[in-house]
Image (cartoon, rainbow, N blue to C red; front, top):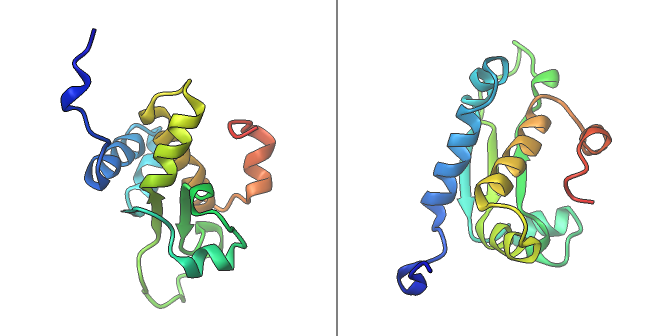
Length: 135
């Protein structure tokens, strides 16, 4: 039996490392463009984001793509802030515990791929047509 006495929940740096590994493992056609997206990990989504998305419970939002999808970018665009995938540690850990049937790495990887799909121009409806993960 494993010794659980010294284990702690992964911190933000560990969550980011798992996310970066998931991005690096993508097929080459996606891995290159994915490396141009920054990854940030916060404990929870900020209140203004939750309000904008009309989400009452901060544990309901595990990740968010913040940027301009590749399908909407133009060479005429002025360089601005980098595209970012936000991961919300406490919501991720809550979903992982509630599911109980996936590894933390698989869950983080799935969230990252979902948010990267937005970077590539997919809507939530597009993603839902082929991905039934959250049903």
